Every structure is written in structure tokens, then in C-alpha cells.
Length: 273
Image 1 (tube, helix red, strand yellow):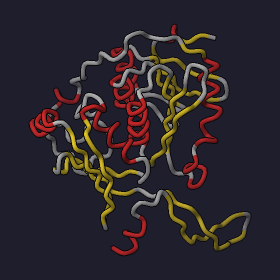
Image 2 (image 1 turned 135 degrees about the horizontal axis):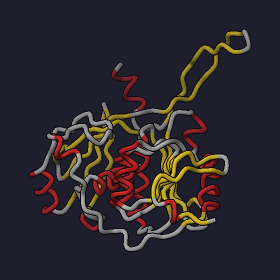
Image 3 (image 1 turned 90 degrees about the vertical axis):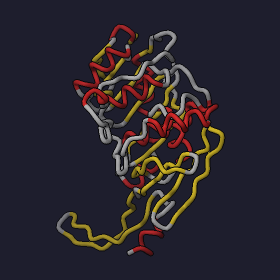
């Protein structure tokens, strides 16, 4: 068991023998399955959290998670990062500023096994809805609905792991013209967003909008706001709490973006034809 598990470490997908029943016939064939691997984020030598994630773009994931969790304020506070494959998972070692590490230890929560639900590990109800201050959004832009549709129409072709396995989410950044320049995939939608945020912060990308292949939950809206983006377009529905958070942060939140249509749940006036 241990050996079989270890062979999957570092691979985004693995091939398995399966039996398929189709059109009244049973056949033996192969299927490609997406992998999810325990990923430990280790700050200045101290393990902080273990996540289950797709083992790709883990440096982007670590940076994005660190910023959206408030561990780091920006990429300048990350001095180095190293991905280490272990027998039972992957460790991502981050060397961060001493001040941020001290603050991390002060507010450290019991987050082992967290799944990205946004509440796991919170110590009280007050902590759940203590929203971080967001000052990155300098001005709110208007986005053409045609740009959002264009990005939606092209995102599927850029989801290589999803096409191979059918088991992953994707988050993408689209510019004002609707051209997708960055896409990140993961078995977890929160992880995919953190990976995307990581590369956007690393490259200093501003403006444009975020498109997700999943539903939009409240912490996804919060993550988008924390790094200065003001439009989140989801292929599925948002939750009621996500809409209220979008109003609070002045985020344009779109749902059911598909087939040349959308539903605007907040700040619909920023969408243009």
C-alpha cells in the first residue's frame, strides 16, 4: 500500500485498469484518474497546514494560499520556496519574513486536514465573519459581457487535466478583451483559485477578471477581493453568503456564465454590452 501510494506522489494523474459497461457490452480498458496528494505547507521549518491538492503548480499554490490566508501581504515577504517530495506526500517549504512568521505563530490555528471550506479551524463564530480589510481595489472597472463570454468559450480547451481525467476544477484570469492568459487546475476549486492567485501575484497582474469552472462560495469572493480583483464569474451558482460578501467588498459577482448568458448577483451596472 505504501509503495503504491508513493508512486503517485508528484504525478497529476495515473492510469488505472477498469471495467466499462456501455451499450450492453462489458469491456476491460484503461482510465486516467486525477491524483490528490497531501501537501504540507512548512513556514520557516514549522509545518502549518496539510491540504489535499493536485501535485502541480505547487509554488503558485503556496504563494496564493499564503496571501489569501493573510500569512503574507505580498510576494516580497517570501524569500524562498522549495518543493520536496516525501514518501507519503509533498512538503512545500517557504522561507518568509521573520515578522510574518511571528504573527503566524501568534494566530496559529489547528488547521490539519483543512479542506478549504473557509471555516474549518476557526475558533469562534466571531472569527468566522471577521472579514479582512481590503484596500487593493483602487477603482472599479467596467467589463464587457462579450469578454466574459469569450473567456468562458475558451476555458475548456485550456483545461488539460480536466480533459484527461474529468475530475478537476479550473480558475482562469481573463484580460479586458476576454483573452485567457493564465489557467490553474486542481481537484479542489479553492486550491485552483489559490494557484491562480499565486501566479498573478508573482507576475504582478492587475485588472481583468477571474473565471471559475465551479460554484462561487463566499471565501472565493473573499480571496478575489483580497488581491485586488473586482469581478468573479462562475459557471455555476453562488451561495447567498457569497452574494452578501460580494456586496460588502463591492465585487461584481456573476453566476451561470454559459451559452452566451449570465446572472449578475451584485453590481450588475458594471457589465457593458
